[in-house]
Length: 620
Image 1 (tube, one colour):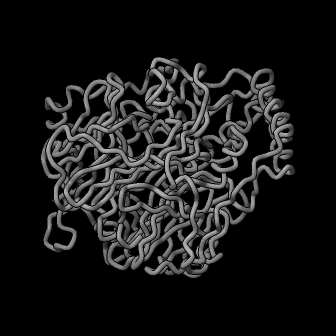
Image 2: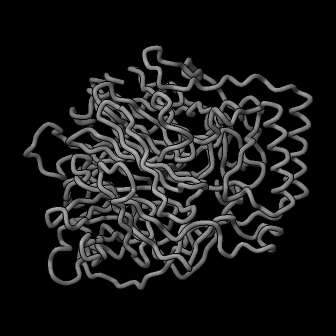
Image 3: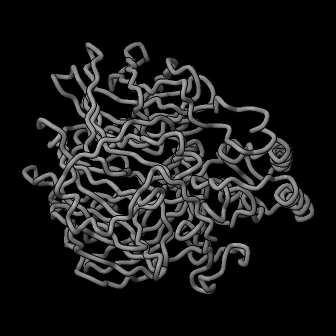
């Protein structure tokens, strides 16, 4: 997520939907979520080298360092593919000049920065398991606590992305900032597993590494008061003139998602929407190598969404990019072989808008234009005092859904539909109905939108079903559950097609996720109100996980049931400071744990991931 531009607004009324399942004993451990109370954690973060520093130390007690432990710490370039921009090798800056710049940075932090708001206070943002691991981990064996890994997963790998800054922040820090670290569970042919954790070697990572601290910021913390912001801009310009980094090589992160795109010869990317994708590779022994920044033979410029969509039947990939200058949204697609088609600029968006995700049907591409942009309440007080953000919710704006034909060559066929109160970060799935005259979109809708940027513990979103009649413009909506849910995933074979099951994380409260539920969204087609939750797995007191990923047992069986497979995720126990990897039965009413692996070290909370089967790994 450029999460460096993630934010949202709007409130809806809440109606409790009755469901006997929700009162079962399986939910007795579910943390209570009170969206009316405001609780800001002041617990100091535990940031440490997990092998050498006691976990009781906080960030102010630890000298940041990185341990480079294998050959995957360099960036390689595939000579057979000319679509990369080789990642820069930044020379060590002149010591005296770097010392001057760093001293100015220290002065800004100590004397100019106002007291940080909770949303950018590193003692709050990096508390508990949000704290980064500062050293990489080469492939290290995992301990089996329960079960054995199913044969259909042998030879494959689960890989997940997350922010994880390489240096401890000395000044303001936002949850969505951080260089990007990949955590990979590699399974061999015998069902043994290893964990590997590697930074994505982006140009930004290498520039920071050469200087010895993070020199970049993001839009949430850039305007932390007028004086520090102006001084940081001057310092940033000075570093640029001193060639400590190169804008032409990209300065974005790679901390949001992982995508396996195109066949034959699948490509694996670490992605974040403020930069181009970075191609990575998983080696046979489970290590992770950064190949380079991928620009598709020079046809892709500046940036690309972290959430491209692949049609499972055709192999085509659909994507977009957005930015702060016109056109604010650009749509494009790729052939199954990875050839980028021409851009389709969308000028019907009047200004910058945060469009983090998209959805596709067999006929259409769907874009949410939510209530976020330049903060309409931006005042001299905000600029001078740092009490607010440059970006924020815009109550004057009406959320819209944009629909365009998949193979449109220009924006003339783009249609926009006002959908008041519908603001989403992520789209779960979409499909066509009524012979293509209607579309259906499944997504978690944020009810407490005005709190999203500053008060994550007040974040509350519910899974919704939106149907739009493209001819009449009539819109219907149904709430699929009253639970606080995000990160909805489905069987990937059903992307762009009507599906029955959704697996979503339970905010407990956000940004922590205390469990996962399964929804049967076909129940919404019955008369009356129905809570569609039909299965759940709560992780227990002090235990939190992340987005799950669905893997089918029989990928080549056209008669297999939609939910016949497994869901998997990392889970961390904050009481014992231990992390595990869970594989759960996606069909069972309690999402039974089939396999539990104890990991050799802590895995911080993160964002999105996927499972790559052995057949696809061999093509990378």
